[in-house]
Amino acid sequence: MTLIAANDIFSLGAILIGLAWVGFYVDRHPIGRKTSGVIWVLGCAMLLSNFNVIPFQALTYDFVGGSLVPLAVPLLLFKADLRRIFRDSGMVMVTFLIASMATVAGAVLGYYLLDLGEIGPKVAGVYTGGYIGGAVNFLAVSEAVQMTETEFSVSISASSVVSMIALMMLIAIPSVRWLVDKVPSSFLDELSEQEKSDLANTAAPRLLLTHVTGAVALSFIICAAAQMMSNALGMSNYNILFITLITLVVANLMPKLMDSLEGEFELGMLFMYIFFAAVGAGTNATEFIGSAFILFVYGMTIILVHLILVLLIARLMKVDLAEAVVASGAALVGPTVTAAIAISRGWRTLVTPAIMCGIFGYAIATFIGVALSKLLAGGG
Image (tube, rainbow, N blue to C red):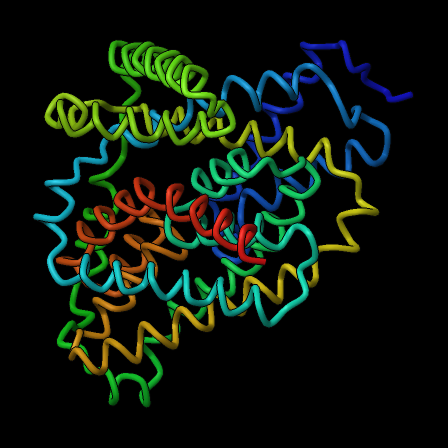
């Protein structure tokens, strides 16, 4: 028995959305630079369920995973205009593609070096998706390869710690004199604090109801079409892939209209954080603790191989160190955080490429992650 019953929809809804608020609060404050809002959401939800405040299973959680998550994918991809991405990203895009291949190499190497058990192919695909794209790809791949809630929670929690370490390494790399000597950079930290503040504030979104409601309606249409297509082809497990593909077609057929939208990305992130709360609530702590360490080691293997290969190829191809860091960051920690790194370093001209490459990562990572997972499962 739990304090809140499994059929108490309103109380469970209040807790899930309240936990999402906690995650966003952490992300916007100094503590968010050292931790991640996702970890707080998962951790608090796990505490509540494992101390019998809320149930491990509820129809409310099923609704979040089955309905809100598919709706979130289009909302997060509506601005994936591939032509603009390639046009505005320059050498950073070339380096980002190298960084993506480095992630795949790290995932494959770690898979064969470590004994991950039966979950190995799933984790390899999920981590590949997450370290090329972001949380939305992490989730999409996990849905496609049919991870259980506990497997997902363990995987993303271990990955979140790895991502924090990766972020610290990316921030530190430009300050390591030996690396700067090996991979020179022409970028200088010359932006004033006012310029940095102005640049950081230009991306502040507005919540326009005409935009948000239209985006949600379009997301429903895309999800409905994807479901019909996947069912007709007997590929219902890959519904998320069909949603991603249709969204990319829409985004590239109507790039100006999609670019004018405001607030849809933030709504998609809200749905994602609510889902993280539901996943945490469904996680048994005993099973979690037994599996987390090996996945942490696996994630660190991917990150280290990724960074070594990116820096080595950057030296061989004479890529600017700042461009290499931005490209790597767009893959490992996502566009928003990487743009913040560029702003803090004064790399003004790299802010747009950071965002563009990160969005491109969202667009391709799910396909790469699922393909790798199926390849490894078939081969061994």
